[in-house]
Image 1: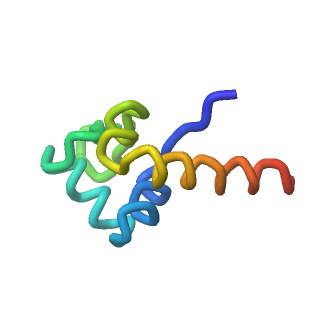
Image 2: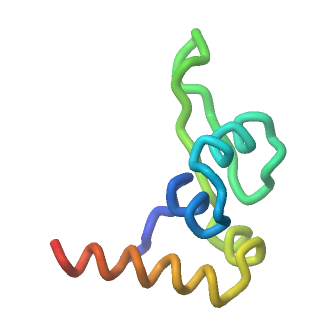
Length: 77
């Protein structure tokens, strides 16, 4: 099963606030993903984080630790 990487997950792995990841994606300053406006007023976004670029950004150890933490939460449900 493929895990969808969220801005919250990336923020935690990078040690920065989630909002910093969201704003960086919206402004195009973080290249591991993209933010897409969902409506015409520009208030709602959908975030896409590219797994391979996230792995390169975080490094294998932090990337695998991030995914292991999410898998552990899924197993608990």
